[in-house]
Amino acid sequence: MIVATAQKCLTEFEASFKILETTNLMSALGLIVIVEITKSGNVLVAGPSTIPQTKALIKILSKYELEKVFVDGAFSKTTFASISDAIIYCIGASYSNDFNKIIRDSVLKLKVFNLPQIDIKLDLENIKNIALIDKFNNIEILDISSTIIDGSKIFEKINDNTKYLYIPKVVSKSFIEAFIENRENINFDIILKSPTSLVLDERLLNKIFLLKQKIYVLKQVNIVAIAFNPFSPTGYSYDSKVFRCELEKNINLPIFNVLEER
Image (cartoon, rainbow, N blue to C red; front, top):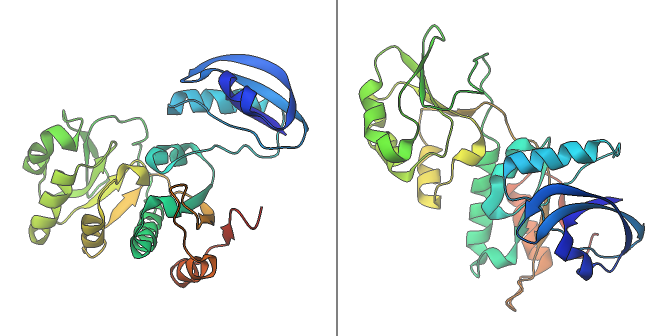
């Protein structure tokens, strides 16, 4: 196996290794190095914090002709899902000491990841501002870059010919609240660059999934499995069988306990 990690993490390796190269990519724990594992054991990984750096690192790893490249992410860094061919979604007891909340929020997050991909060809990938698409698929790029700052101005630009509203960045809470409030007068759907743009609380997510208006994405995330950890590092835990059972009730994917099914 080949591992990319920060220099300062190497002192925590239990596996034996040899350094193949030191990259020019910097992380909070030093430059990223590429190592080959020579004897099995646990390793500590820490990588780049931005998507461009992660893409650059994946490109470096490609020259080693690896069968698969795994990118270690976190719940707060779901944007990394947008650059992956597939994701394994990890659910942990540490998320909350309310078991029902863990299940509810996990199911909602998976619904977001499974937002449908738009089925018409639109050249939106490189557009950085909000854009309107009419009934003939003509694109009008607005001088508005974000729903956070200029959310109210967006609605002023909408007309009867608007079929889709393209939002390339994170969708703000205030914009979605206004969207829901005006739902009876809205006849357009929303297109997001990625499902990771929809970072909302449980209340708002439940509401938007009940709307007649649809939310599409340019690229759908491919979730291939669920991994769960019933133990929290703060000391509490949940019954593994109950955890699995509740996930299986709501999620039709392969499910693995990360501690018992390594």
